[in-house]
Image (cartoon, rainbow, N blue to C red; front, side):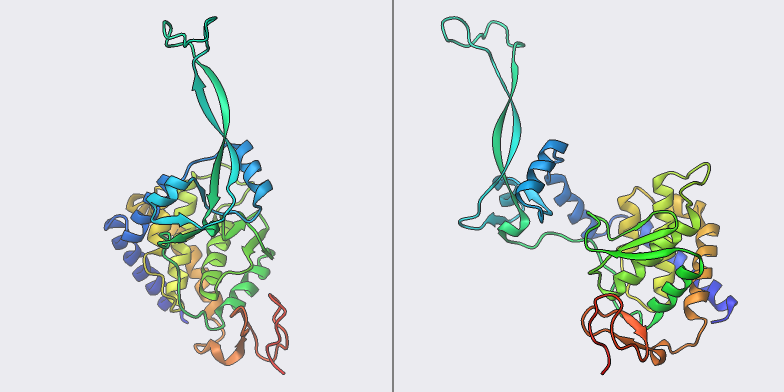
Length: 301
């Protein structure tokens, strides 16, 4: 793809993203935020209690909260014990409440029970918009570009609530990401590596960093034909970004996106001719590869 074509693609995509941001929160983002508002932020001690009893827990809430979300706890499920604060009035010598001084209360803790989403049935929880489509071989070229910059790419089974992480010279991705999301997340983390060095001076605010990285991922994903939908705009707004944040970073975003697009489209215009796709995890691999480097599944005979 010629440099002028790449720049036009980037300009068009950024204009599209700006228009989407102007429209405000999408329905999926509004529903997601409403759901998150119902979940309690547990203390560190309660997080440890939850993980000790159910290491695979992801979304945890009490019986009534699940009911409000249109879900119910399955029959026979055992609750996860946490501690809940309560205030009581001390008793007087006769055993009655000391109601004469209502400010005199004592903080105590009681056992309470919560349940993971896996222990419930009912209405599906609102989810973030996701990138879809088929990278058609571009993922391997993206990985080669990452490697050419001296950046190590690793896969992990668990990154907490994140799909990827930029660690300054190393990028980690969640192992089970669908192929389109793998490409988009890798581009996002690469943008962080290119634009936001960990040891850089005058580090930009998180809102700016996340807006820039996700905008780069949007432009590049759009350029190779992935279906991005509202995913990028939703992500940016989740970090309180908007049209002003985007506009202030357009030059930086365009330069990073252009460099990545040129790298992943430089070989030819029909990338599927040179790549096979793993039948198990849908990862692209150079044609002739016998075993997937990501999950180990046999690709060719």
